[in-house]
Image 1 (cartoon, rainbow, N blue to C red):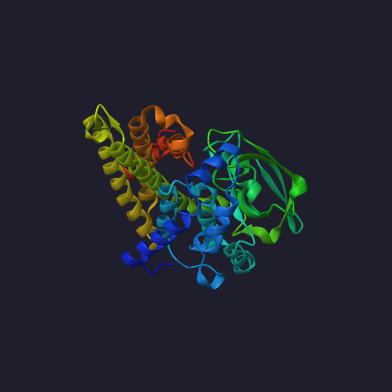
Image 2: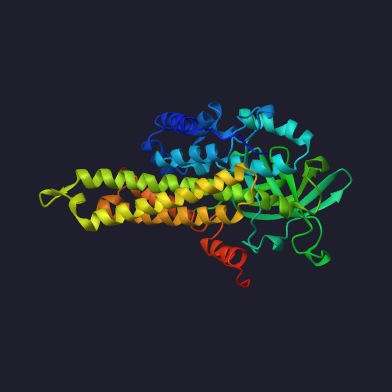
Length: 388
């Protein structure tokens, strides 16, 4: 469905409103969460109450019925404020498979409650320890028995599973050696994690950033057949259809991070005086900041193009992937420029640079490695031979 494009004034109003909300959750709020490895429940509730997490849900299901352009602006502003939109972004991009391929009954059953926050859909169960980025090699199985599926297997790098009521779960319903195409035989389900909590074991993974990351063990988990999304065996395609949204939204967070680092570096470079002059007078300080700014601006243009294509219903896989690649690299470059500008103070937690520095690094390898993006562009855009 083609979205009605918001005007520039409407987009700016969204940005201003999100900035106002974020001002109630200053950097010290995020620093405390990071120190204690806690989830920003209050922030997520505030986002929900103001309707920002339901922007992509159509109005008939209780959402705002807006598009990727608006959603991108929201996540960008959260990260530019010093926050971390990763705590809530999955609800936006997991929605795609349900909206595009779910039944009307499933939409009516889940979307209104997700829009109000009564239910949380924050977990996406795809990655497995032995498969990594090779999704077709996952070994979690879902076996049909009467009116339900019995699921057994293990998932890893699943974020926010402890703070989600529902999970979109990809499992193999037909063994890989029994399908013509390796992408066949994979099915996508809506898993009610509360209903099956006795059959699900969740273990925290201690990581360098506070991202609520876990590994999950599924033992005889029961999923009603009515919770199968679309057609059995076609789940891989449903997952792919949502990945463009994921790439665009991740790019938006990286762009927000990039602007955050530039904002902070400019402010500090103007205020910090060494040898009787602000350090911002030195080209060794100026140039990395200015170069980072240009990189972020360029990445933003690609993100904007990808978001507009998404909302227009155009195929934009290349643009979405390139936006993610360019934005994550630009944010990391800006992170290093800010760290160099702050010098030793950049390592002090009270200045918040080191926290955002760690967070910015993630999106160069997740949700997909930038090397795989380069490979995608080489093969599918430039027509070079497949490299793996």
